[in-house]
Length: 223
Image (cartoon, rainbow, N blue to C red; front, side):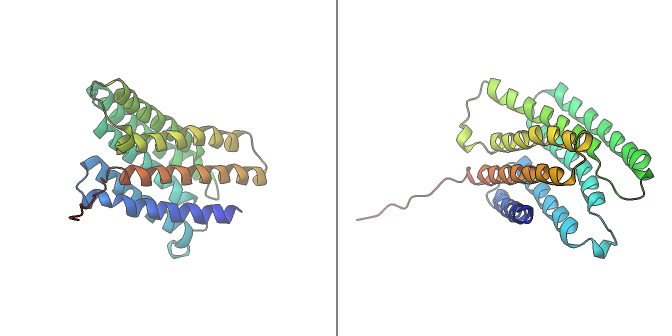
């Protein structure tokens, strides 16, 4: 069951990335093209974590995902920095990105380095989720309280923020449960399966976010 969910997630992720490439062909705003690049790096990360560990002489994919945590926070933070209008909050994002980088480096070098085997950096994951929730919530607040009326049905930025917020709000407590409460691997595996389902839902939302801007063309008949 878990393997099926994992394969479905990878397929949806690939489709999401390929759909996002329309942002380059149709000249979407820079931040949407940047987010497409982020999706491409996510695809590469999953390929490495799932298929290329022997070539890198790694016995676990934890180091790959731990490095991705830092890249993810910096990328998503920069994406929302491009969207958010408040200059004070944009500066706050930069400060939080720097502080998170310091936390990630110290956590990796001084806490998880002492283990003989690679471990999932759950603290960095939870803190990253919290910061991403703050970034996305601030953007949505500005969107909903702004003077400009927008059609949310065709607003890619809105749907991307919703997908990110939905996943991060669910991942944060699940990661906390797995880290602090769960010692049963079977139960932890079920919780991770829920996360993968949420991942699938998030990337399906991303697919819609990139395709919703395309206006269908209707050919008129001369008859």
